[in-house]
Image 1 (cartoon, rainbow, N blue to C red):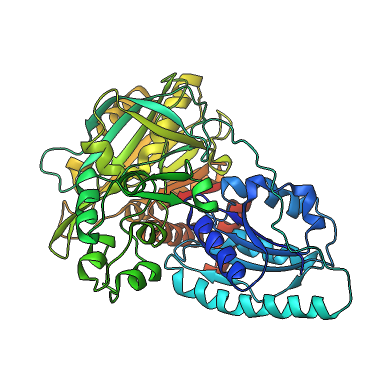
Image 2 (image 1 turned 135 degrees about the horizontal axis):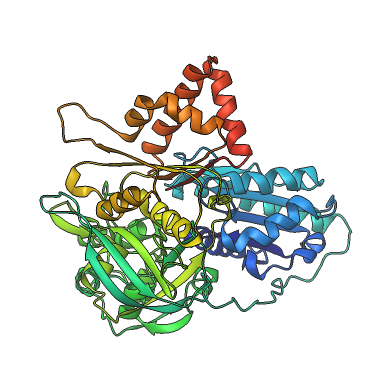
Length: 528
């Protein structure tokens, strides 16, 4: 049988992990397979491949992840017919997004349009992807073996069984596979006295170029105390040598041999648990449990290398940039909600957020990379903008306003901000000052718990429906940033209601009007 190319598109390494495990399962079945980063896959070679497995996530609201952008664009626009190609697709996504698994669906649809033949039907995996991926793999492996037997009995020439050759492309500095160090300049608490939240403003020194609307990824490290607890629970020596093997680690800052302590500190996810760790430790599933909980409850000893191979890779954390490079040359600013909570009698810590809060004093150097967001750019300087950003969703809008001030833009601007309480009014002093000087035309705030009834940004939007509609009719561009699960759908419904009421449209017509605004790049969302 022809060698099997298992290509992956990833932003947080989950697809890379599954690609590595898929290739291993195919190899264990006697087939030749290798996991390949899409960034290392030459587009023009696609027509020469005969057996292809695609495993890809989706970034943002339907975009390909950064390492898949080139291949995705080539496939959509330039690829020739491929009637001899056989393929299968595993798509990863999050059902809270409108365009769930869109990148994987794009690959599956376009390959079919080009004449390629599906080996098994595509699977669309939600955030908890382990079971659907395994069910898909259980169909894929025997289907691949059947193809190999058919190829062997057909009398057609068959390529020697060898791993596909990959031309490794050196990633440019400041990309996910090749982060650069940025130095912590300043950090201050944004949430005020009495707040139930801990929100930080963090400023880094960096020469990485970026535009407002973009984000930076931070490669975090696990807390040393947690690493030591996990080593004790596993009864493993932290100095034991282990090896990080496979595509997943080639795409996450290094590969090869290191100590178990280093692997747990900088390469492995100690929170999310999948079947590999449960099997290795002899533990039943623990609802909400982390790796430490599984090891404490486990009934089987686990070896250092086995522990490494039972954990997912540590993923980077992405933060929308809260600064304009014109206003702050050589700097990048983040807005960070610090995650701390109790679970099963233990305090749990957000990996990156508590690192920034507790373990990154001034002058600390952090590995970061730039993630562009071409779908979330400012329009021309004279175009009005409406920005809806509760909580840390205000971050890119601080950058937007700084950029417009630096450029002398004259377009009107309207910001809707929401939080639980007035003490959580992030950048409140700055925003009021911008409003006073005329750089922010209008500011509406909603503090949900300052009164008996809950008031959110969508309520403020409905209260100003007539004027909001007038801005839209005048050509304003709508921006939404923040929570994808509740806020973004609520805001979307409010916009449909406003369009329906103010333009006297049926709800379905108003929804189509909003969709048309999105297609025309006048309704842009960066939700997470």
